[in-house]
Amino acid sequence: MTVVLHAMSALLLLAPATAVPPGAATDPAGALRPVAYEVKLSSDATGARWDGRERIILRNPGPAPVDAVWLRLWGNGVDGCAATPDVSVSAFEGGTADAPEVGCTAVRVRLNRSLKPGRTTDVAFALTIRVPERADRFGRVGAYNFLGNALPVPAIGDDLPPYVSNGESFQSLTSSFLVSLDHPAAMAVPATGTVLGETRHGGRVTTRIAAPLVRDFAWAAGPFGSVGGRTTTGVRLRTWYTDGVTPDTARAVQADVARTLEFGAREYGPYPYPEMDTVIGGFDGFQGMEYPNFVLTEPSSLPAVHETAHQWWYALVGNDEYRHPWLDEALAQYTTDKLLGTPDYCAQAPFWFDPGMRIDAGMDYYATHPDFYAPGIYGDGACMFLALETLIGPDTVRTALQHYLSANRFGIAEPSTLRAAFQAVTPIDLTPFWDQWRNTAD
Image (tube, rainbow, N blue to C red; front, side, top):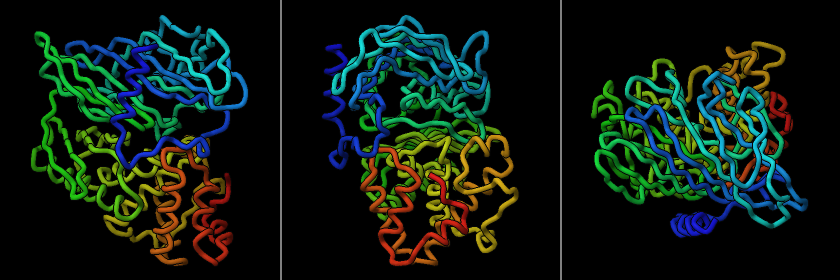
């Protein structure tokens, strides 16, 4: 416990000057807050297997004692309860684990002692991660391993949606991570956060990484090439690429990331981190995925810009991605369209291919109607914000988004929060607008 608390203090000292502690007002009521994570993992020779321990400090901000916490093992989402799980946990300290549930993506941990309001405790466990062979946010392609959503994180309360492959089911609270990755010296490990230092021992290296005030921690492992740079706003850029990508292509993608970071800082609010890591791969059908300070992308502008836009819409302002996928995806795609141009189809939007198709529909609908997900959430969703610009003016939309970001930074937002931010900056009654775009549910 002492070591972890010292580590947490170090993380807070490393927090960006522009950052503020997560506001309880924008956190779901009754949720145990992960104050800090300490993770120590060692890889095999290929980076496809990682073993070690994870420790999570938890605080009870609510008014009542809490006896248990659910851990989400999202890495098991595709393969479920396989004979050999992709992510497995054992040897718990601070609590006792029940059998996995929800397709082995959820483990209930009963705390050794009831956690009283305002108090903290820690839960630790042995962790094994086996990266599956697939082109995915958590997957392995040849010599390259991508470890998105591989670390177990606490669920928010007892809310346990299933994993979905064509979208996201994730929702996590802002915390801070100290991560130690022991790996072969020839292997690069781009990751969320900033490298504190590296220690060589024989043919291996231990890389120590700090990631203050982020929702998730992701990394990659493999013989990546790299290029670097810096935005005009001072953010350090590190761009990593597989052997199927040229350095010139990597620089072009890095330029897309840079202009998105500069646009977001100018239009919405500062990017409060010193670094941004971009990992480029072919992925063979998997376009990309966003994590704080870290994105996976195909070598093209559209996914690079879109995933980088998520640094504001989800990384900074979080949401329930299963129940309200439009809240981050539509805003990220709107930002993408602002940078890459308004698509012609917006002139005919919205498109309703099914009576149940709505911008405010959740992944429970879109997981069973996958063909409607992209046109409904990305297409209609982005066109909705562009249409709102026509109705109330682009400057007014920008002002509303700035206020929305400022009020919900590092917290969790609800659909009503965003709609209220727009209504607050215009005398026009927006109720008919939201009705037209089938966006009224909370």
